[in-house]
Structures are given as structure tokens and as C-alpha cells.
Length: 503
Length: 42
Image 1 (cartoon, rainbow over the protein chains, first blue to last red):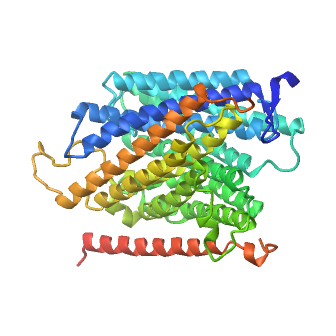
Image 2: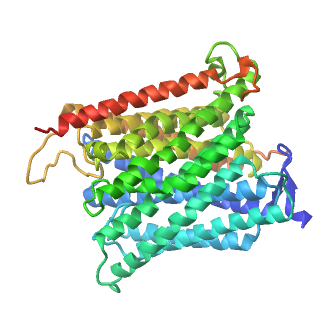
């Protein structure tokens, strides 16, 4: 059994080698999907930019569907599974309960993701991420997602089994670390979310195959958002766990109050799932009382949790930097922070972008009356590119700069490019998100191939302000794609050719 | 946090939090204003 472990020379942690291998394959697969999704993002950007208008409509909707699946599901979830194994087996000095089950989960996820990818690329499944009934995709599209969801549920169960095993074998003392605690909340949310996915994707797949005569669109929408948005809440919990980890790794920060931060995670576990109903605020099939309860009252307990973390994370970074002697004035600590460390820069972009861009706009769009202003406009993708891309993706990119030396045992290649990478990606995504929300406030629809409405039976022109806004969106997006490409090149080159850390 | 020395207390973060709240209040007010212009009554 001892031969199954190595001791990390940097952290002193005992690393279970089968867990390490599973972390590696899940992380690498995540980056492959990030690369695919990024290439598609560039093509989509150059199509929505009316001056370029690159793709024909069928390819636009096909690639938009795959972009959603690759980025919102595959890149994020593979990375989260790697995080679950890291925060359980590695951080607790434990062995992964059953590595073979981990491989089963990986195979199911990969077979599922591959089936869905092929089903979309083959055509006939241009249903976009929401795949609202009565839009009908190939039955294989739904089959792939169900297999992916089942694989992820198995990975979550393996995470909890590893936590139990670590407790039983007494591999750690006291409570689990805060990062593991946050990952556990993410895993709890993931199980409920993925169960929602299975509940409606199975009958929808049977409907698409002709076995079931009809699907209720209202029931579909309600259940879909139990999966579609709640999956983003998993990201929030995992991202905040990463924030605490990054704060510790980059500046040696410790939480201001463990109880405070843990209480905020508990609020997520209890209340964040209801936030998904804000997608249905203008859906006639759900009563106003129901919507108001979910989006007017309960959701704010989850918002409170985000506010608590939004104070706690920068607060602990400030205290850590003040302890290093940066005590002059209010912001010397921020000015003298390690801005050349790509993980620190990613962390700051992630926290600020998630709070200022994604958080504030999320509260507005989650309000029933205000939702009408932005519903189905580009404001909505502007919001979620701020939360999922600036927030979650940048947190995951930041932690990768530590996963590469600690788990892959390779020195990060191209350090100068790595220093610049978060600035390209972060600035680009900030520009893209703000510009999307700006043009969305003029009523520009989301997911629309041609906003000149050239072939429409009615004529409408959005005017030059929107044209300028769409061009700025594209420029921000191109900057972000360059930053994303830099990240992929650094990660792949380091994994394949990076110098061994212990050499 | 109460045990922290004066120079270590996260005063900058408190300012950032108030700035965040101010931005939220402004955007919230603007959103209701835009709504009132879009959704006319009477």
C-alpha cells in the first residue's frame, strides 16, 4: 500500500498515485474541451459581429450548441471531478476509495461527451444548450448527456466514499479543510443537479426516438433549469473553494473565520438551487406566488452566502499581505500583491469579475420585474460569461498553475507567457461581458444569427451604437480567445515537455 | 478577526465592499428607471 503513495516535496502531502493519475486524465480532458469550446467561440464571435458574419446559419446554431456543451458542461465538470479527487484524496493524505470506480466514471463521462459531440456535429441536433422541447435532437444527443451525468454522479459518490475512508483511517485531524468542505457542497449540489438531468433527459431521449408520443414543454423547462442552472451553482461552490485554495497558495492566506466561510457554504447547499427558477420568470405556466417565493426571498439567502465569501476571500488576502509588511494606507497590499504570479492575477480577475459583473447583474436579472428588460437578450449571456468564464474558468485556470507542478510534477513552461495569460483572458472577457450586456440593453437578442433581420417579414434596425457594441464584443472575445489559447498551449506543453520538478 | 493588530485589519476590503454595494445600488436604481421608461402605465 505504501508503494501507492509519493510525498510531495513542496507541500509534504502524501499523494495517492492512482488518484493522481485520475486527476491528470480528468484535467487534461477538461483542457481538450476548453480548446474545442474556445475554437467554436471564435467562430461564433466572428459570426455575431455583423461586419464579418462568418458562418452560415446551420453551422452557427450547430456550433453554438456544441460551444455550450463543451464549455458549460465538459470543460467545467471534468475539471471539477479532478478537483473532487484532489480535495479528497490529496488534501486529506488519503487513498482514493476505489480507483477502478473512478475510471468507470471517467469512461462513462468520456463516452457520453463523445456521443453528444458526434451527434451535434453530424447535424440534426442544433437545439442549443437548453434543447427546449419541441426542438428535437438526435436520441444520441440525450443518451450522451445521460451517460455523462451518470459518470459524474459516480465520481461524486467516489468523492464521498473517499471522505469516509479518510475519516475511518484517520488520515487527518479535526475538520476537513475549508477547500474540501466547499468541494463537498459542490458535490452535494452536483448529485441533485445531475439527477434532474437524468429525470428529464431520459424521457426526452425516448420522445426523440419515437418511444414516447409527446413531452410536456412546461415540465421540460422546469426540470431543465433544475439541471441547467443548478449545474452553474456547482461551479460557484467549486470556484469559491478554489478561491480559498488560491489565496492560501499565492499569498499564504488563511480564512478570517472558518465558521463564517463554512456557514456561507451551508447557505449554498440549502438555498442556491432555487435560483434556477429565475429562467422561468416570464414563463406563463408558473404562478407568480411561486416565482416570488423562489426569486424574491429564498434566492437572497444564497446571495448572502456569496456576499459573505466576497468579503472573506479578499479580506484574508489583505490580512496575509499586510502581514508581509504592506500596511501603508488602505490599498498598499493590493498594489504590492504578486501580480506577476498568473494564479494570483487569475484569482483577482475571478473574484472581481464574479462579484461586480456577474453578481450584481445576476441579482437584477433574478428580480421578476427587472427580468423583462433583459430576458432573452444579449444581457443574459453577458451575465453568465461574467460568472462562468471570468469567475469559474479563471479560478480553474489559476489553480492549474499550481496543479501542474504539484500533481503533474512539471515546471510551468513559457513563464513570461503565463504571466501575461490572465491579463489577456481576464481583460478580454471583462470587455466581452460588459459589451454584451450593453448591447443587450438595446434589446439585441441572444442566440440570433442575423440581427439585421435581413430575411425577416418585418424590418428593424438596431442602429450604429449596437454595431459598435457588437464590434467591441468581438474584440473582447478575440482577446479572450488569445488568452485561452495561451493557457492551452502552456498547459499542454508543460504536461508533454515540461521539466520534471524534482530533477 | 478581533484579535488582529490594527495595521493588519482588512480596512481596504471593507472599502471595496462598500464600493461594491454602491455600484449595486446605482445599477439597481438604473434598472428600475429603464423599466419605468419601457413599461409605461397610465
